[in-house]
Structure formats: C-alpha cells, structure tokens
Image (cartoon, rainbow, N blue to C red; front, side, top):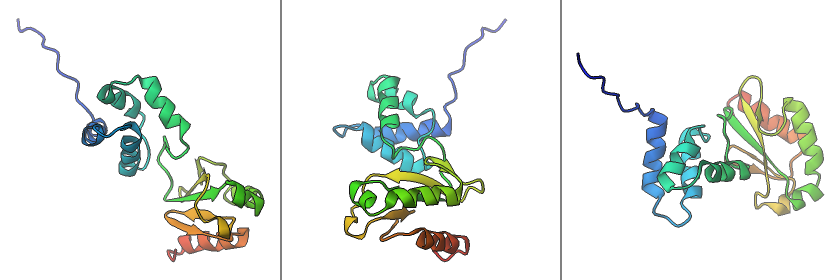
Length: 166
C-alpha cells in the first residue's frame, strides 16, 4: 500500500504575482505602501488574498496589512469599471461647489462613491486634492484632470467616453 504524501498547495497565479511584487520591493523602507500600489497597478485593485500574502512576505499581521488597505481610500478591493471618475473633496473644491457637483454626478450615474455603474463603464471615487485648486472644482477622469467643472461639462465628458472621443 502506497503512503499518501500530501501535495503542497498550488499557489494561484494572483498570489504568485503578489509574492513577486513583494519580493521586488520589500527591501524599501516602509515597503507595504509601495507594494500595495504595485499590486493595485498590476491588477486594477487589491485582491482579497493580498493581506495574507503580504503578511507572510513582510512578517506583519494580516490585521496590519488589512488596516493599511482599508485606511487609504486609494486602494480598491474590487475591480473598477472601464473608467474611474474622481471628484475632489478638498477644501478649495468644496468652497467652489464640489459638494453640489458631487451630489449631481452621483444622481446622474445613479451610484455612490466606491460603486460602479450598472453597465460597468464608470466607477466613482472621492479624492482629497488633485493639486489644481486654482481651477476648482476639479475631477479626474482616468488620468486626466479637468478643472472648473460643472454637471454639464461632466455630462459632455461622459458622453465623449461613450462615443470613444475622450
């Protein structure tokens, strides 16, 4: 009778990729944040298995890693839509009407922050300064910052996205 030899667990490609990213960056001081940025840049979000993998790689507790992921609004734990729309919520933008713009855009898209439209086209996220305060209120659509925004200008941008012009 052959002895049963347990097989080593098969590591998913996601976990393997996260381990590689951690290996590449873990010598940096304060390596957790650069690694989390690399994970999100690679996958578009921070996969669920990340906390466990990075806890092992960096000799931290899962709670410590999870705490950093959940503290920073930048880290997304679910895949984003095809486009990400950030609305600036910093003081300068708020003084120039971003709260009303935020309310109108949420109503237009029929979603709240950290949600994606039903068609998967737009994810809405808050941001706390885009560094364009002189042109408040500001939004960032994917990588492009747009100043002096209104609901009408936002609607035009979103329409251009649908038409493939943005």
